[in-house]
Image (cartoon, rainbow, N blue to C red; front, side):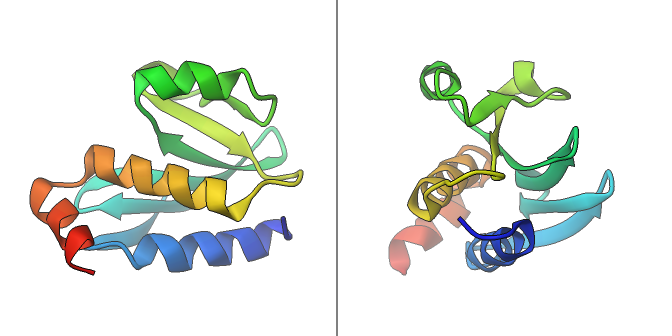
Length: 117
């Protein structure tokens, strides 16, 4: 994986390529939204760069067994997990998780636009 700035740049490019997505600054860091709902957040938590994403409950527990993941402190009980990016992480994994998160919050019409591309 690259520096946090490079990861943010790549996260931004990928997230904004998804239908009707946008970036807003909230709580002092970039939040990526599908319509009005957030699907990914780039942040530093306790000095560690990370990406927070929504995930379904079944996959959440499996991911939490991996030391790169932790319950997002402010929203972990609401379907959010975070992945540390201060160590080697596959971009394919991040992209897969961001897309899953997008699909959880996006409207059906947005998800249909994914299928058109």
